[in-house]
Image 1: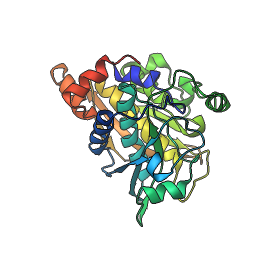
Image 2 (image 1 turned 90 degrees about the horizontal axis):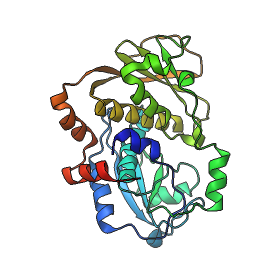
Image 3 (image 1 turned 90 degrees about the vertical axis):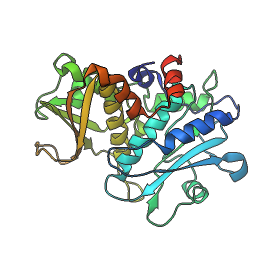
Image 4 (image 1 turned 120 degrees about the vertical axis):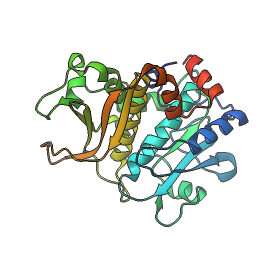
Length: 298
């Protein structure tokens, strides 16, 4: 299954069927998470949590007893690094039919942080449940999805620009970057605010954060969203035969006071003979799991 299809089909799952996470699925997810790096070079420590033995829960989750927490050192752009790495895990799980949802606020944060063994200088941006989606959403989940318009996305030309923020980018003009940018548009975000703004300048793609939500606990949840967007762009671009170089060099493009530069990708073509190997290395799927991800029907 193509990565763009996984991205498009994946949804946040809050209602699970109550089946315990199979040990082989848990092991494969944890193995994948341990190797899920990010372009910021910041390691994430993943901690599986059993709700039955720890007493942990979230008021928005039904039927799942396993949670996955991630923690890392609180350094510049750590939120984006976390978002990138965790989204790789989320997509890996989705390709195997395992449901997830990003949780940053609807939990007893202190209890989860204690159970995850949070140390001084670390923070735990988000957690996710892991389980098998129920055939039908709970009423609570349906109401939540309607409340944040979960299936709605901003128009292409509202978030992507060419050379400057004064020139909206059309899908036709996006050319070889269209699918990768469309993958960004489908990224999940806190209360579906979609804070990414992207300016394409020749072979450089610059990512910005439109700040529209107050920081919480000294960290920026919307930077997590930018990490997710960067992940979607990278995975889809590389599957489409493009090679990427990650950089953080502010291009100096004039922008609004509520908009801040985050990072960029330089883009070039990848020789076809190297494409398949390049994708597998980036996704970091062991061969049998790569095959499972490609053949699983969501």
